[in-house]
Length: 431
Ligand SMILES: Cc1cc2nc3c(=O)[nH]c(=O)nc-3n(C[C@H](O)[C@H](O)[C@H](O)COP(=O)(O)OP(=O)(O)OC[C@H]3O[C@@H](n4cnc5c(N)ncnc54)[C@H](O)[C@@H]3O)c2cc1C
Image 1 (cartoon, protein in one colour):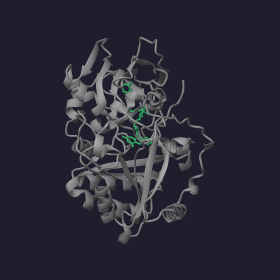
Image 2: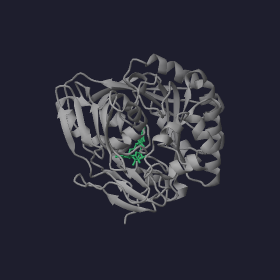
Image 3: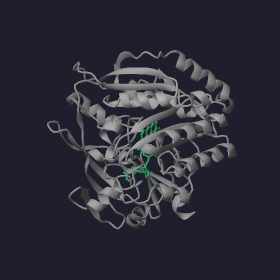
């Protein structure tokens, strides 16, 4: 029996864990089952407190691929990194990449993940052509826009509840280079962020780092990064060398308001207001944290929360200002804070997180009650403006808030496989 934890290191599985192999026919436990990809969700989504957990990391074969059209069909446990290893030499890339490549194909579908190019491309589900779904009653369904469409839409963003995602067929993106030309621009206020984001709309990947401890007059200040693929014909898959690795959890005092303030000051100082172009490989821009193995241990043994919410475009300024002001006043938060403008909803996912608007994602070291109280206040602000909280990052929202965020949740509950559950689902539907 192995203990698995999700990325925030707060939630651990208590149930029985099995590791699925490509040849295995029996997928489900005899008790409520949760699927676990790479556990890159931060909270209790891939966690099961009493039933069985099925880990899919070794269920990772490519079933077919057409390098002419860029269509790949692979088993659900394959990581995005493994997909890139195969596709890059042929000039194909992922249409949508979350901030880590250690994410499984099944996990990317279940959360309908998004990347820095959401304003242009939408979320992952937009590029899913079909899905093979195994249900615990022994039935097997093929899902697509043409076949079993309703279940297709509910499985994309379905939090792994509609059945075991056996394989996924995706459309890849043609690229001429794995190098990205990137500009990092320092800006001083929230007004500047919205102005710069608008100006950067034609860039492929856009997101900003924000100083979560900025004083009131500089709320929202930070560094906006924008990048696009070069044209230099270089197609190089970058291996993680893991020169940097956190071998053990840092003590809890290592991350406090003073050390974060110092980091934020230093980080802003090395960037100028004038945009400067630099060319670097995709990993540096899209998956910067993947190079530091076990970086989540820097938050100490008590672990950490991440809060990510998205608010509709028409309230984006007011809501973001209110969220950031509260965070700054609380003195909590860390240097990992990301602000991003999102485009229209293009994915068929019925319960997807992304809407057209602005999202804010922030890590919070776990300081017990103080942190949980702050998270609840952030949830309330987001809820007041008609926004959504991201299940992939959540470990705290109430049932009421969840149901307000995801108006189609009942459709998911009705389509849920009776032998699947998760600690997250128990929390947000049974409170
Ligand atoms: C550093 C970092 C950066 C991130 N950046 C982003 C980002 O920019 N955008 C974004 O959207 N997300 C981001 N995430 C979150 C991450 O992309 C999602 O949580 C993703 O779903 C994790 O995939 P996983 O394989 O680890 O799945 P897990 O976290 O293990 O599971 C996620 C869900 O998928 C279900 N699942 C997994 N496999 C299957 C299967 N075969 N069948 C049925 N259900 C299944 C699980 O039951 C669970 O509900 C980030 C995470 C990290 C750690």
